[in-house]
Length: 377
Image (cartoon, rainbow, N blue to C red; front, side, top):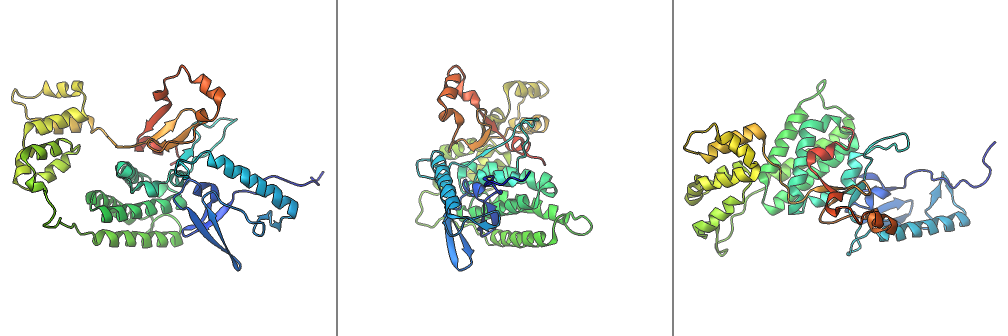
């Protein structure tokens, strides 16, 4: 028997036209794009990341709504905006977060989209944060070298846009040029690895990707290191030896140490000090690992040689100023410094259950390798 009365079921997702194509409106809620412009016939609609409906532009299932439908849908939209206002930060911006499905069961069936997660966590804007830059670059490194051919077209598009943001950030900050060059070299190798003479995927899509890659290469080729002017004082060469040593003690990569030794004579002398390499060993490795390698060494200890033995045996420790966190309460990924709208903060009954729980164990840090395991790649 046909259903005669009004059908209030949702016809699907709301889509918004952006500069990069059509995007789901709920994805743009956590994105960096505050206002989107859309041309509809002779009128122009501007909607914020939360969106706004006008009574003249609402369509439903291919037909125009009557007055009663418009009023009901407008009231639903106001309720939705009120709900989202609870999730905003102090400055009114939506906190970037992404709900994920940890485990699929008969009752819970879900799929985690990588491109949606990138947009919800606002990775493109996070590139310009010095604390999150290394984390995102490591994630791009893993995607380019291991997962590029497994990504969907939308995920590839977001990946190249993020890489373009990295190029703009490196060009503006004059820092981490070696990381950009490494990513571009790996990308060039992966693109050259063709299947039947061309990369996998749509020809039209890859033409767009190649245009983006050419823009990134153009940005990288025009980066020039600007030396500080003569009026800038003090320069690195003017610092006392003790200060330069403290700078070297805070470097966590042996390649940075070796490059620093090529800068000028004082650094070259300090890099050869045993203390520099001993502290680097203690940062990356446990005392048990260090003792294990020391047992097989000669009485005269060379900490630089010991460091390279430890590196080859156990690998280096990954350290990031900020990482993605997983909330065990609401199964949500978020940036630690920004936070997220957690169910524990909104439900008093849920808060009572957490009185005897260690609050620090509710948020789990997610390294880049673990982040990719949440997605079907």
